[in-house]
Image (cartoon, rainbow, N blue to C red; front, side, top):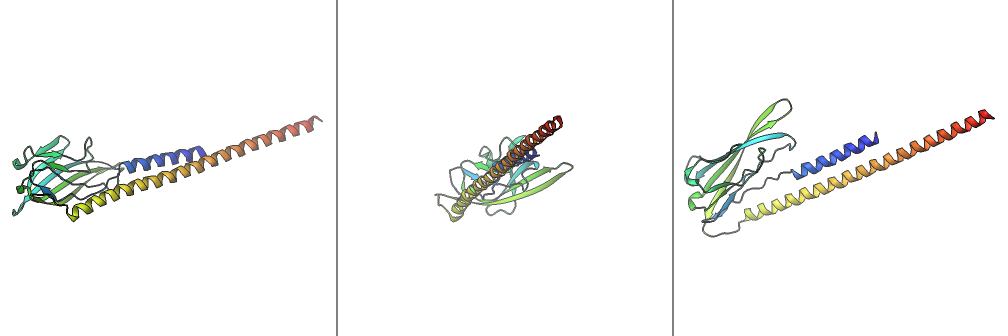
Length: 221
C-alpha cells in the first residue's frame, strides 16, 4: 500500500512540473511602433484548463485610423500562415506558437512599419476544446491600438507590460519551487513510513518465528 502511495505522489509531482512548464501568461502587446522598423503585435489567450486537448486557428483584422470597418489581413491555421490583405504582403510573419495546433500565442511580426499602419488591430482565437465525450468551440478576441511614431519613446504602458511579464515569470517559478518542495516532503514522508512498516513487519515476523521455536522446544521436552 505504501508503494502505491509513493507512486501516486511521484506522478502528482510530475504533473505539477508539466503544468508549470506549460503555463501561459497573458501579457498585453506594446502599442507604439517606430516607422521603418519592425514591430511585434502581441496577442495571447491562455486556456483555463491546460490539461484539456485543444486546437485553434487565428484571424487578424485591421481598422486604419479614420476608417469605420475592419479589414481581414491575416489567417493562421493547420496549413500555415496566409496574408489576406495586399497592404501587408511580404511584411507580416507569424511570431506565435510553433509546432503545435494548440495555439495560445497568436502574435505576428510586421516588417518595415509605416505611418499607414496606425490604427486598431484585432485578433481572434477560434479554439476547439476536446473532452472525452464531446467538443466545445470558443472564440476569444483581443484588441491592440497601435500608434506609429517617427522616434521611439518608452511609454508607461510598455514599462508596466514588461514589469508584469517578469512578475508573472517569477511568480510561476516560485510556484513551481513550492510545489516541488511540497512533493519532495510528501515523498520523503511516504518513504519513511514505508521503511517503518517494513521494519515492523520484519520484527513481527522474527517475533512470531521465535515464539514458534519456543513452543516447539516446550513440546519436545
